[in-house]
Image 1 (cartoon, rainbow, N blue to C red):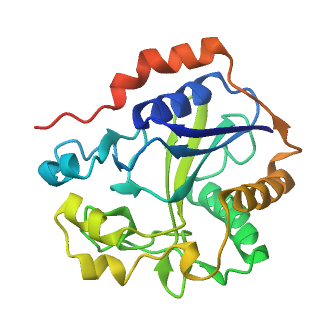
Image 2 (cartoon, rainbow, N blue to C red; image 1 turned 90 degrees about the horizontal axis):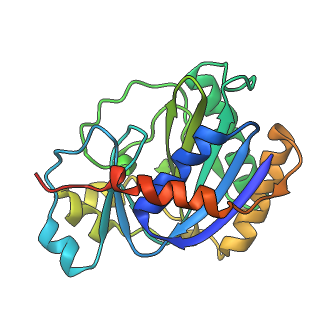
Length: 245
């Protein structure tokens, strides 16, 4: 398994790099990253969503469209992960729910090792119509005290599967709710950040997650994307721009 760590990259480039890695992968690739500034990412089917763009400009919050589905996530004070598997990998050949459970298991074990009393949600049918990803946990997503702590989304094609997600350190429910024009109190009752339970650094979190992913996906080899890979991502980043309708 190759491991990539890229910090403080622009939102469109983060999305484009995930996609490029999914196109070139020949073995599992695990990427950890953060964002250059607070960024709202929308599921690929949310392009016509009604956002408070004036508020977002005032607060300098960027907006991108993910290559994966799901609902909107505000990336701010978090660690983002992306896992790419070639299509012939045993977990890639399993069902979407089975692969979600395997990946969630790696994350949950790491968080439990760090002292967080996490829970993997059972299979469920969503009834929540909120535009916010963290308004309710989906099947096999991770919660603490019933509050969602990790939000993930997956994309599959003939070459690979890509799953990426947000591991929240500090919630920003006021800004999250205002961006999406949803009720703030509803989000506060359903979303939590790890720092509410104990102090933890991104470095400690990343190291523990990597060790758990190694158990399932093989020994980690540090990998830095070459110039060609970055250039390919730069050429694709406008695909993930959100255009006001």
